Length: 477
Image 1 (cartoon, rainbow, N blue to C red):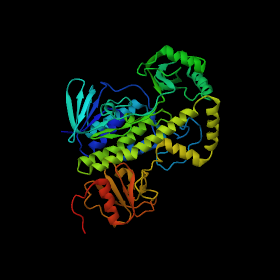
Image 2 (tube, rainbow, N blue to C red):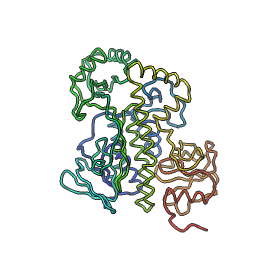
Image 3 (tube, rainbow, N blue to C red):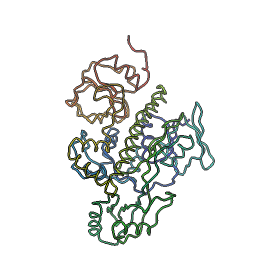
Image 4 (cartoon, rainbow, N blue to C red):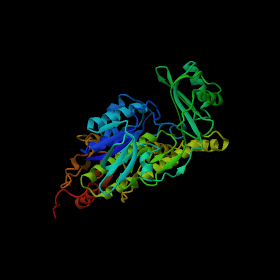
């Protein structure tokens, strides 16, 4: 029997498929589209997502194809110097979404996931034993669990009856790839002038004669599934920039709004939601794809452990941890949209915030929101490290992230006096030291977040049981 069905073969779906396969979970990914999308919505990876790739040994694949940029100007396009960040990857990795999709798909397939394209889910039922989906071709497929990673219009979310409250779009933006009829220098000069006030406008070269063009729409369309026309782009370019740049030969055209919605819950029995199926928000700051990948990184190891016998309650921590994170992203993206409006009121607030961001602490605080290294889960401990992701500290024998490729828990023991007896099948015990850590030992979850620090063996056993299930054999008295 299939262990987990994943609906949606985008970055979120393929990330969780790969995470599950690290633990030999049988995974089938159902993707409605017959071919990978060529639409470029996301343009790269933020710091935390790069760390995620590093923790799984994937960083080099992405780094060799991407371009590193300073982490500056991402909060509402307010240009400030990049703050100093507590990471070994203090940059944004410019990489178009189709490439990210391809790399994550390759990773999942190499790990043994099965991808079935042209498979549209039309029905879903579940009981205490598993989930069965009906497909558009009349066939059915069953599994023990299902994860819906099928986007903002998620069929899975609708089929299980999870509400999706929030705010509808109030503004709409046109986005597409096309060629220009004017020299690049001319287009860049106009863009620089227009973007002094209109941050939702932009033109960027993509190579091979194509440009990425983004421009505010006239209003909000009744049906966002209806793609804009080239004439609509030309009209809006003339309205916003005073010229249509002679745009022609579009490769793809799309539109997006600024709706903010979040699933009322992330779980319904044996069905989970992740990525855009669980939350949608304006694309300001480039957080969407990253947020979905990080959802998967949180859920994957938990689902694998429960399939292996850990208590079902571990799965409830997925929503408890990730729902507040997405809620904060919805809040900061909506705030950024307000700050990007051209009316005098929002512009006044924008100037004031720009002055505040001259303070290093404010600049860092807002930047860390965007790149997601400020996240702290509530594990019930007052220790500053607990609940936070641990950066890639240098060890005497190497570096932390190189020890995490298998997706297991990790006890980094600087005292050499502790044990993971009973959990060695799920947790690695590494006795090593780092000048960057001032605690005797640290227990790191498979997603890189610190679950415990200290030197008390009984307290460690409690936390091992909490996060990794019961010991494989009776513990010594």
